[in-house]
Image 1 (cartoon, rainbow, N blue to C red):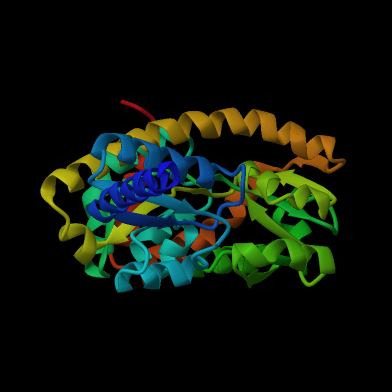
Image 2: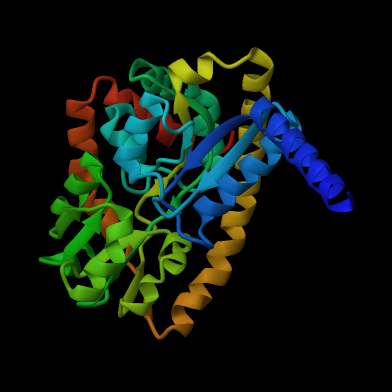
Length: 326
């Protein structure tokens, strides 16, 4: 009788658990970040904030390391409703040229500058995203990018001549490195370590947080501190599916996205110091590039963006004009 009673009690508990589970809405957050990356920290913070705020209404679950797909796959899965949130960065310039403004070398000077740009231009970015079926729930960060490779230290753009360099799938990043003389090769982030290890490519460019978490320091000889591009991260959803959520849930998710940006900026600043040491300690030779030489070599990219993108020159002028606080 005791055994039967235990079985009945266990069955009742399982039934209660199933009822609770069935009452929850599960939302999947996919990203390409490796364990220990800024992307992982960002997604996990957003999920924890959302789950705390929404209680048993919604559970946000995170899936890193491209488990739910690479960047372009995640963009498609958002529209299909197979994924609820993603954290794209450079790939957004392939969604709409408006996002290519962040591909302009050295156009963002620091995070305070980025906040001013966000305050002034968020309607523009949101409009571009929604026209393509997406909704920006909030902004986060990928960060300031630097170059690693196995050929030589990069001091000036000419040092990139002939180097096979992995870039994200963004047209303006490709054009930039072509202008510098490199041989840029678009490639999914999850494929980069093996490509570096086997010599398919010579190098890549990413923030310290992506370099160290993906362990690129194990297969690269040189790190050149260029800071050539600052890329935001976008906590992105489908316009259709996000818009179908109850308004209170939308509001809580948006609030958590705003809190996540504050967390991400603080975390990124911490990682910039600690992870550079990790990379150096792995035996990577580090040099600081000639920023002025890179800025001078970037003039044709600015001109091309201004000529080819509707409103491009106006965006450039606006962003540069926000470069210093009033």
